[in-house]
Length: 570
Ligand SMILES: [Zn+2]
Image 1 (tube, rainbow, N blue to C red):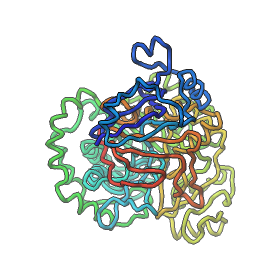
Image 2: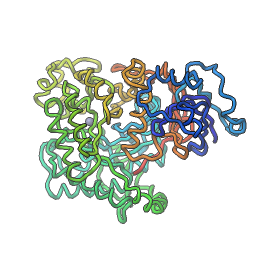
Image 3: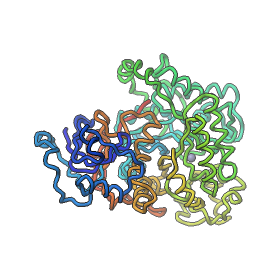
Image 4: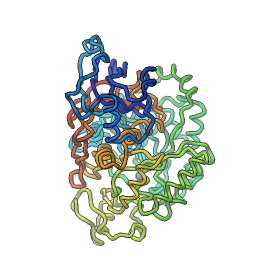
């Protein structure tokens, strides 16, 4: 299948391209980029490359540079420069997508998503009325990373196999959740430290997960406060070791043999049945062919020295956020590993953001490989039974019970009272809540700061939850770019090139020739999130096409092929 995307305004920060280009897709890859009009100096154009280094290309700026190059991205009737697309290319395409007046950019990469849903039938849950993956796809995400905040619903390496077997609505990468392996090692008390034997078993579990293709390790320190630095080091050391050796490792490839039990870490709703489903599915020898395939690439991978990511929902927020981040960064100091501080809006978004960002920046300047992600909302979402709501939370967030809204169940949409808070925490601890407690100024400061990328933190419970799962990405353009808080190029970078680089994904988040043809085509004037706290699944508007692997996965906000996504492995 050859698709020509014609006349669109290509924004590809990984390649520093912000100009009108035609893109030819063949066999799932970007096969040619054809300049339809080049932005930049005449000399640069003559040399055949564009030179737009500014990270401050906003809509107005885009319009200005477009005008300078004889392009009007808002005017569909503009004539294509005649010499640029050869009729031969046009004719050779099986399908031509007219992208005039549209932005064409790499599919969004969501570095922080929560779910790895498996149904009782052992298949990936992708029901459009309740599941998160169709929401991701409809908002332009083509690669989503699950297993964040220490949590996996089931063995993450097996989940990747399942994605390859069935296909998912989006490409899926996984982090190995430290808390998941902690629970598997028999730590039943989240407030108590792990024993030496348990720590050893956590390390072994993580080693297998990395060998099975996980992109790194995540910690939910907040959710298991008994975890100390020594325990965290056990899994961090596996990342450092695997990075040095390359993957896969001998003797650790038989992923289907891993883990006879399958608990979800932390405070879970899932129950055992869907875990059994994935066990059953993974019981089939899913990896045997893959393993053979992989051996050929061992050397290349070792040479590349993939650097696994350590991501953390750190121990505490508000006034304690500084010490909590320092605790996590100690892993970087000790092991030289790559760090990601998760969803900083809900950690430092209570008036600490300026100082927090300055602290992170100081560490970066000092050589620490650390970055952050954030979602563009001023309310966080977590289970009512989580440690977040342990005694003292109202003092920390300077709020009352009524700052918290229930996402589902008996009190859906209602603000809590002392009575209903107590009742729900006791009777339904896994129920999701939204706490409207962060400062929007802090969120804006985070999202526009250097080294901060967009991550949805998406999580749903039976189709209920926080609208970030279905709106975070378009919202960055609607609420930040169109209001002049951020340039379009900058926003696209934070949703594509920056997270892809962070995760070490060479063929995602960019439209280089040979890269996977995961592409979003949207109207920069119209794109907007529509999901709300009462209707968290509503699809955004203004996204014409989402392509995964060179095929159309979503069109005009509707999923047309929900099985194009594949596993993304380290
Ligand atoms: Zn978290």
